[in-house]
Amino acid sequence: MEKYLAMGMKELRELAKSKGLPANGSKRDIAERLLNATDSEKGSSDSKDNKEDNKEEKTEKLVTATKKGSAVLDHYLPQDIKSTYHVLQVGDDIYDATLNQTNVGDNNNKFYTIQALEPDDGMRYMVFTRWGRVGVPGQNKLLGPFTKDRAISEFQGKFYDKTKNYWPNRKNFRCFPKLYTWLEMDYGEDEKDNKKGKKKRSESTISGPKESKLERRIADFISLICNVNMMKQQMMEIVASTQGYEVLKRISDEIGQARRSTLEQLSGEFYTVIPHDFGFKKMSEFVIDSPQKLKEKLDLVEALGEIEIATKLLEEETDVEDDPIYTRYKQLKCELTPLETNSQEFSMFSGTQNRMLLWHGLRIAPPEAPVNGYAFGKGVYFADMFSLSAGFSRIWPSGPGVLLLCEVALGEMNELFSSNCNAHNLPNGKLSTKGVGTIAPDKSEYEIIEGGVVVPLGEPKQVQSITSCISYNQYIVYNVDQIKMRYVLHVQFNDR
Image (tube, rainbow, N blue to C red):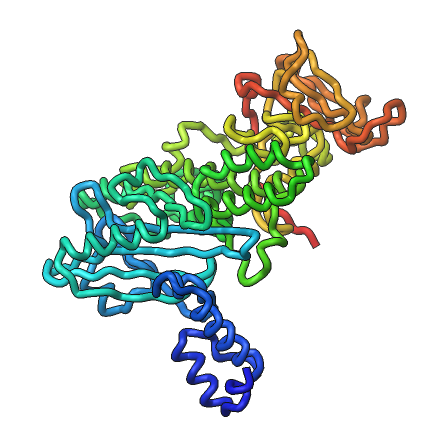
């Protein structure tokens, strides 16, 4: 430390930059970064790559994605390489690997990427590696030039060194403690587009309303739900697939058994397959050790699954150039009709925030999800008050949201006065669960519409005759055949 503090500020900053470290902050800040980087280099003697793994630094750099062939070139490749190389593909093998390792006990949360690069002129091959803590650019190295066979050999060697798995057998990947896990990528749609020479659709075709044959209100709504930028916002914290459900199930089984070390291990496994950017905070702060934390991660993984479905729909091979909004509307296979504000149907629901058909603002839990994260088991949750469902329909206090009013066939309800994550195991003769709340719409103002459907209108009132741990009524069905969507509401929240 002393030798760094003895240096001039300009010299110290230049040294930090030469090592790929941030050069901002006080002299002591920069000196500590340099000292930590030096200790990391000394602390590992296995190989140069292991030394590289332990350097975890932050730099600020604006990056853009460059796609040539089936895979996106790494953001941090030198520009001259980006312009003249693409990721090597031989048959169905795309030589692009993203690896991740999270170990809570050792405070590790790091990535390692490998790409074999083929020149556009087919002459000199390269291998590019980049590594560091998740969320920062990290260090990188460009190896070569090589022959094609040598580049493949270098790529496969790096993959084996980091995972102890052979690249040709990666489909049967085995995870080993304190080694990297391979995150499998889906190149399928891109490969189809490349083979057919299809023109890449820009995000702008679905990011905002344009001239369309659709009625304006419907066009605005379709623009919202098919907005790629909105999907990206929801995915900022996580970049992966629903592999995490299997780990969350095991965490669910462990919560409450007071085995901290097991929860640390399982949390590390989850963050390995569902990478999170925690910056340089201690990983011990992010152990999934409570039902609340488990539910948060379930919500994140569910969002990934829904975004995957949405993006696959948007990637369908259709001509969206002339009227992209109408094209997306037709893909939904669901007819929408605007409801006029002066119509009888609208007036039935406009007087108060308390409704029932039934309000829905929460996703149905997929079958692979653990049950512990859900108050009344895995099902579709409804409410008789707008405000309750509205809370589940958005991430931010202000902005657009979408809610459904559904006709729900509840049948005989199993009434519960406290949460029960096994409520989906209904007693004989029961078709749904009702979490009985202490606040509910005034029953004297309920109305019945066509088909005998009850609509709970009226101001919320305290229910004096019951004792319950639940604040508001919740209605849960476990079979989607009991649900008929009647109205979609596109709303704007303006919380202050």
